[in-house]
Length: 300
Ligand SMILES: Nc1ncnc2c1ncn2[C@@H]1O[C@H](COP(=O)(O)OP(=O)(O)OP(=O)(O)O)[C@@H](O)[C@H]1O
Image 1: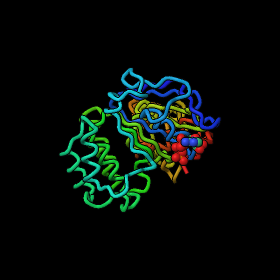
Image 2 (image 1 turned 180 degrees about the horizontal axis):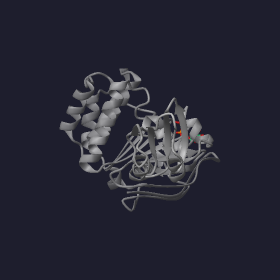
Image 3 (image 1 turned 45 degrees about the vertical axis):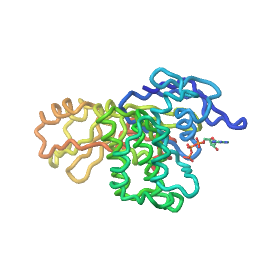
């Protein structure tokens, strides 16, 4: 588990992070969302022990991370700003990592190279931006980390590589309870991946939400009662956050559990009734009433 309390970090007097609290449960995927300069990279670098906090607490499995080599063996950070030594190939980097990381898994390394279709003999610096990212992700996952920190991991990747990266992450979380912290500019990129979302704004935690809890208490419904429209019993007995009509079909966003919605609507014998999945964007828009500037920026 990751536990962060009152974390602050300034660069040359500029407050990059201020009194940030964060909690990530073991075996979960946490999405850090924010605009450029919000402080996402700074959080990931502090959590990976690359930077020293000015103030506050960072505990991973109840242990401070900075200068803790044993703990750092179990952490992998894929930075947004990738660095590979001149002339090194993925094969060379694999050998280098093998000597450093106790958890290095050569078989997994070879499998991932094949899955991404990477050339392990070519100099990594000659790879395109997206392929470099795939190489860095391959190296990180091959260290068998308990904690994987990913800074904009799918930025610049083609759709096939994006899908593969997410699949590999989700598989690893399911198989070995890996804990993942992933940053992005865009809320919709995190669709279907994250268990929790933290929205960072100007170095502060703006909003933090656990998605399953939000999803279970909010539902989207497509319903039709013919030309008579939605009966009063439905409109009055359910907490409707949004309603729009397309002909005789109503689209409703309802702040109730699915079972309660079903009970109220089915009692009125609708001609059409479908419970539809809510997107991450819809959850945030309707939960916050659509008035939140920070949410608007990350939805664009
Ligand atoms: N090494 C540094 N020296 C000076 N300022 C820094 C340094 N690292 C970060 N900052 C500043 O701290 C703030 C937060 O930067 P950070 O890189 O964490 O944001 P970010 O959310 O990751 O942004 P982006 O999405 O653009 O990568 C920015 O204003 C940035 O200019």
